[in-house]
Amino acid sequence: MKKTGIAIHGGAGTILKSQMNPELEKNYLNGLKQALESGYEILKKDGNAIDAVEKAVIELENNPLFNAGKGSVFTNTGKHEMDASIMNGENLEAGSVCCVKQIKNPIELARKVMEKSDHVMLTGEGALDFAKLVNCKIENDNYFFDEFRHKQWLEIKDTDKFQLDHSKKTPPEKFGTVGAVARDNNGNLAAATSTGGMTNKKFGRIGDSPVIGVGNYANNSTCAISCTGSGEYFLRAVVAYDVSSMMEFGGMNLEDACNKVIHERLLKIGGDGGLIAIDHSGNIQLPFNTEGMYRAAMDNNGLYKIEIY
Image (tube, rainbow, N blue to C red):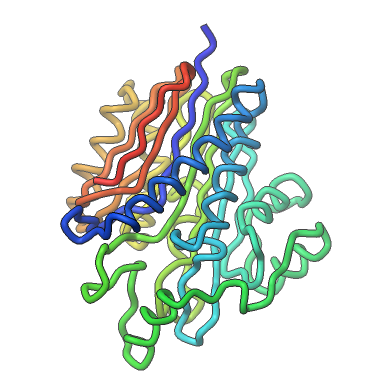
């Protein structure tokens, strides 16, 4: 039997129900549901996994609740620098963009890099020039302005501090990344990840999200993965590829490999966060070692779950 499936996330971190406004919680759940259903609708119509993950992430990028696209946090200079990556598990093709400004949907640009260029990763002004060539939607800075994000930045902009989209003064705390993974009817896997990075980040900082094999990875023989968490630690642990390698070379199943990396290896070096994963058989895992992770998944029967805590 064909076994399709899709999973998405909107970030992980200190997300406590006791600190969550009921209306805000409802908005998060609705945002996750809308993104999940948009991707699943493509799979249901026998569409491909790449289209499904891109569509789901675009929905999350367009929702200011999530730190990606429109909801991206402010850098130290009061701008928005976004990262994104996408990968096709069928042929291991991938595309990535780093520190891009004014791009409405960075995940769309990442896919253009994969399909319309000879490269895998583009950054900064060069990526913006490429975006104009391939007709990606460009917005002015006002499009990305959000009062809550601006307040986060103002609290720390004159310090050397930075935040992974969280503040002890303004819970819930969360690591700001969005992502999606999927398996289509042909057995192809795909993964997509997008982020606005850290509040008050400096020096062109890049985290794990746009790095293939770290924050994003897909291989038809193993799994597709999108990560969210403390980027510097995910980079050091090469999280996404580590899960795939445990399956390919260690003979582990998806659940054991994910738990080994998130609950043991990552914690050992001080990292926290989570990931979403789907394997070649359509099995889905959503592990995290924080108090919560905005997450949702839907299987080939149309059964879904949407959870935060």
